[in-house]
Length: 173
Image (cartoon, rainbow, N blue to C red; front, top):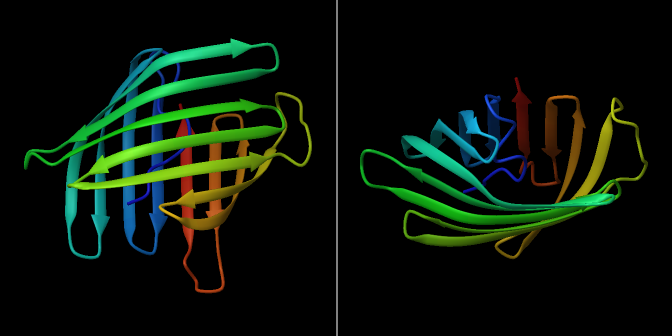
């Protein structure tokens, strides 16, 4: 299972739409931040064999704002009417050039981990298109990802020689 590594909460009263697709899952999420550090929402996960509707709650536990950088720690949880439970801890640190993130997940009696190291090849102003080259380690498998974001839009893509594709699209509104 893949989980998104970007903005698990948004500003108070903000809404977010996420879509993640790879060769094994489709994950559609809609969330609403009832506070600046708490997002609630719903998600629909579909894989080759099952389809599941879940409710989620994402908490920003701590944010560190430093001159030129920021770090965050999140607690993520999802549950459904069949008593399936997902929870995870996600931490990240970034400045305008570097990005580091890590997540540990528990879902459907399985543990997984994900780590990312990202680099922005150029610096932009606040209104520009931000581009990142990310190396992701998901349960021991290394994957290159390209990330682009501008204003409230985020896009991540990966294509490789085995046609193992990945796309994430996110909108804050």
